[in-house]
Length: 116
Length: 113
Image (cartoon, rainbow over the protein chains, first blue to last red):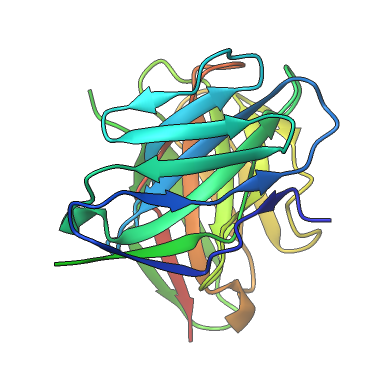
């Protein structure tokens, strides 16, 4: 079973509007972390935001916020006031447990296109 | 403060040749991870190393692939006798340790012709 599911292969948004990118996850570990990365066409992986499973508040970083619904096992990324430079692939990822390998498991990604 | 440095950025190899991909972690980071990204896919974990130790290689193909992180120098991902299916982007990430974030390099795009 997939551990990270991103159900939107592609999303379109008008410049200056907000957009939500969906991510659901599957784990039985009570301790985990959720990450969002942006991959522009140039190919690098850019860290956006992190949410720990025990964090009480939803994470925010500038125009990025994470809508963390633990009971639903969802960690949607909200981008406010979209800009043309936000056009990119967006990946949700999860790290399970404390200690051990600490590897990340990635979803397949969502391609976001911001229209002028 | 340089980030994670990967080289080469692009690498072309003929089938049967060897590919060596290098990764220098961020200063102060002793944990290195290698991931592979096939076209139109997310990143898939390959191997996790600390200095001179392989901690988790559960994502590494059983044959032809190896990785090291020596006491001195960069981490190396080595692919012997490359095949067309090895064509992918290979990313390295480094971390200061447990419960720290990851910083990714820009990746090496391997093309096997």
